[in-house]
Length: 230
Length: 406
Image 1 (tube, helix red, strand yellow):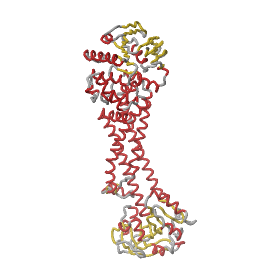
Image 2: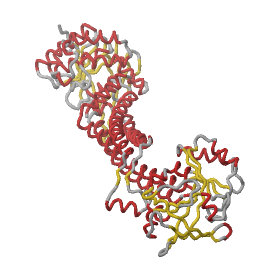
Image 3: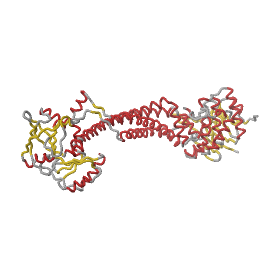
Image 4: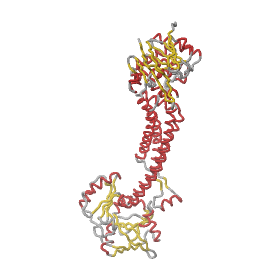
């Protein structure tokens, strides 16, 4: 079953007199539970593609349909609510809210969703334990290592029970062992919750874990390959 | 909602020093504004109160031509109906009849022009505490034939208690008014202009001197609250006769009113500049706060934070800074200026002489009227509302993708 359907997605940047096609008419679908790496050289358009897919950057033309909803047909307010309920984000620089503890960072999105306190507390605990930092629930981000912060970011992304998670270079700021354990964690979450993961990455270790690799160059899909990984 | 407020509060202390410096600028703005206004208003209130007590009262009833032509010819008889109305009004604390005229005061050697006031000694004393200002000698009783003389006038005339003065003036319809009166006491007023020229005499005695049996030139009224002046004037309006007019102190002393308004305008200008400086300081802090958190704001919107909620949180955050500054400013300033209100600073030396030469009492009086404290608070609120326009603009045009890249 397709979670995401992308039709003729195009993004053109007006750089003065020169128009740059960052994404050039991409058509692609993503199925429930996929673990996909979108790869390509710098400037190939993968981050722009992910931003349009995540409802952050408006395409010049084309459609992004998630769960039957044409994302770019929504109003700004609806789009923000849609993102909250359907898309999880993991960023390169973790981007946790610094004044909230690890637990509060995870809980906060559920609070925005209006979930009751008891459910929030339970799920926060469950998620932080699942990502292996249940004992740091009351720690502020500044007291956590990069790897731990990224684990909190993954837990936060999962908290709203999204259709899929977009991770833009999630391992770029991590050391080797943190990268390995984070990828292992995300792979587990993918299997455990059947959540779709889509990565934009340069990192070979991420590619080695991905069961689907989409290669983009000059804003176009160069290849789309599936791998059988255990 | 409480979570947003909690985040706003925590954000405030991410950079403690900056928050404290900004709150301190608000604090000093409130403090200096309160200080300026308290001192200015206190001085004016003191001056007006003195003038009202010793001279005009807060309200006066006069014969309709007296203000234009202050002559005993423009006198009137206070009707029983009006007297009853005055006595039955609870806001009126005292009412006293007067004759105000001019006389040349002479002794064997010198003559000086004087401002002669025929008063009801007991009521006048109740109104202004006149007897407290006796510098030498004693106060006069009702029906006394003696007079009280301003200390500077007495000094100029080289007379003292027990000496006699000849008063020469013009009585009703041009009748010559002459009399010789013994000085019973010398009055030293906080207003030097009064001490220079005033002579007090019992009303009946003055009526005889001016050939004005039972008539007066003015009836002076004091009220328990200056805010009631207009109300009392309206009340009295229904009881006065055709030839009588009611005036407020502002009508009778327009020069004082002009002085107050002029000084208030210049004070307002200084306060405006003060608050402008604070406003720009606050604005720069808010700008820094928002710019350095651009990515964080972008992330919040990306994960599902509506811009309206984000803006609310930012506004609460900046409001906290204002509230901390305003409340601490009021908490610190109120006891200080309340103490100074109760214990005005008495000036001495050259400063005192300067004040007295300008006709002011030589003391720094302070006021603790509520508006002195809530006006700066309102001004700060307005400043924060203006600055919040920038926050609204900033959040409205916040581009999530650009913010995430910042």
